[in-house]
Image (cartoon, rainbow, N blue to C red):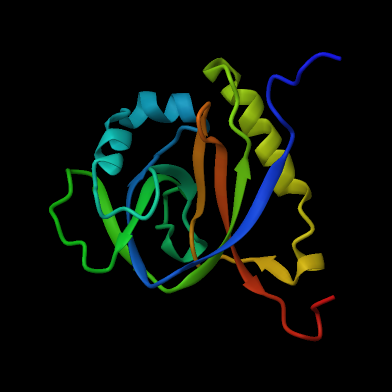
Length: 172
C-alpha cells in the first residue's frame, strides 16, 4: 500500500477570541493568492508575522459584510492583535476593533513535501465545506473574518471559521 502524500485527517477545535483588533490590507481585484500578491505585494506576510503581539500567523481571509466598504471586496490579508495594539501601520493598511467571537479551527496534518501545499489546502477546504456545523450546534457567523493561514509542511494546513451557537430550538 502506497503511503499518502498528505493525510486526509483534519481536526476541529473551538477557540474563543476576546475583543481584539484586526490589521488588514484590502485586495482590490485579485481572486487568488498568487494574483493578490502580484497586486498588493507579499510584504504583508513578513510585516504581520513580525508583530510579537499577534494571536496567530498572518492569514488571508474575508471580512464580514459590515466591514466591506462600497466598491470594495471582502478579500483581505490580515492578522489579529490585542485591543491595546497601537503601533503605526504601513501605508494602505487598516485596523478595526472586533467583538469577542468563537472560531472553529480546522487543522490538517503536517506533510513531508512543501510542494504538496495545494493538496493540503484542498483537503482542509473540503473538510470545512462538508463539516456538519448544525449537527454540532453551530452556524457560521458574519461577525468576524474567516481566516486561512495557508499550509506549511511542518504545521499542516490551517483555517478558522467564525461561528455562533444555534438557538436551543435549532440545536439538534
